Image (tube, rainbow, N blue to C red; front, side):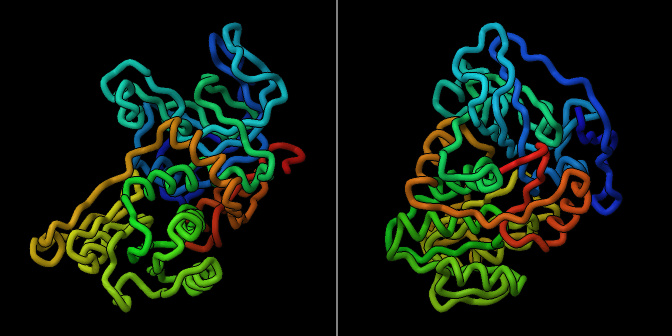
Length: 340
């Protein structure tokens, strides 16, 4: 099968992912094999490529927003049928019996495996996953529309949940890429009376934010008309954390949607950034429940991801454009011969 592998970490500019041919995997136990149609691109892939996230060993095939069809079943697999269209998220497997899994927080499981990092990912024609960690794709979404829902959407949904928003509170979104442009659609549907401020440097990102319902846009260094009650940081840089905290109203909350930051977090001043009972939370991965709740919600409220697609041989180019902030909405790699 055609696949990309990362043999050694390097800058995205050096095009470190190598196209190769690998044996087509065979499912075992409760695994299913997926014939991959498309796979979304994510800043987490940049973290893997550039070494901020470390796989168990190299080489590894990245990619964790996978949409495809079931084409083979392991001997114990019975949850899905051949031909079912399914998706796979960042969470590839969890043990189900540790204290975190028993509490419904399998995103914190010490033994969890992560698609495209510690388990083979979706930048390949076929991949394997345990049947319990694959999700039906709602029929209203094409493959390319569904791909960003599986990370940008699912982790964005978790971010909204952790923000603990009350309708009418002012919400600030820092960064406006794949996840934030889905989150704003969730917010407009669920919190219609909440003003939304978007902080982003790119003019094209500000226009998209306005088109999707933002009431105010500016750069992360700008001051919005009113203090922010709930802030969500989707950026890959550490500088936005003190910028967001400084704009929080008393009792405000900042939720950081990032597995890694590409630059350090600057020092925080207690009075400016933390006093007045400001809260900081990080989003650590996703759970199965997040995916099972979000995908039907996305169909019900009519979320429509804006997607830019790339051919299979354009993967390194696409990741570089993602790093440089040049992708409008979400980036998706076409892998199957005739993806929807």
